[in-house]
Length: 252
Image (tube, rainbow, N blue to C red; front, top):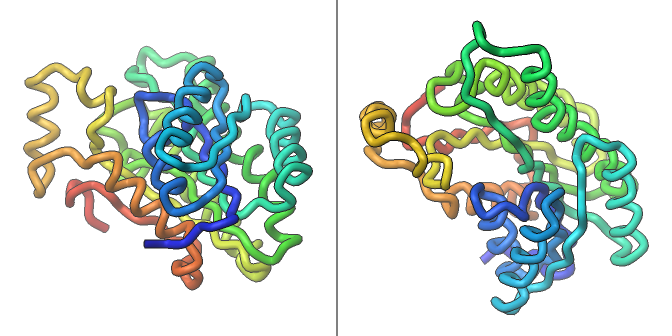
């Protein structure tokens, strides 16, 4: 068991029941953390907060628009005034779109980058300041196997490009702030058993499975466990790293 007692942990995009953020938040809460459930969907935020509290955990919901600098800074200001500390940021919020480059519009490209890369930047920039000041922090960014293999599962080229940008950004940031006790790492999940996966036609889904050596999609809990480890004190000498969670679908 990793101990997050008294630590304040933000998981963005954790209001959605369709992705992995809610599972991550619940996992942190079970290790004693004070969760900040940050999402633009307040109905989903409240659901996640209620689930965590019913399981005996601690959680507060905050409406967050990651594409707004003001929203990100307001969240951090509230956290510091309320709890006096900010230990972990998990940049999980993200969107996707299945479209070919031939059919893609510039607005499509901007929308995907606004959330998946620019939103991650704004949230990180706001959160890293109190971490650097305190001399401790953990930032874990959600990228994707699509960033490393050029798509082939979900989304289009704009999604792959945005998630690849996350990897470059994370490594550079690790060089900047690791000297201050703040580690920055990324995870690159492959096919994970979420609602998006379940929506695929059976023949298309089977083609993806056939290319996974382990012969199955990953589970959200398997991603959550990796994220929680990277956010722990035990991962103190890991920074600038990217961890593949894909059952062998892509190997560096």
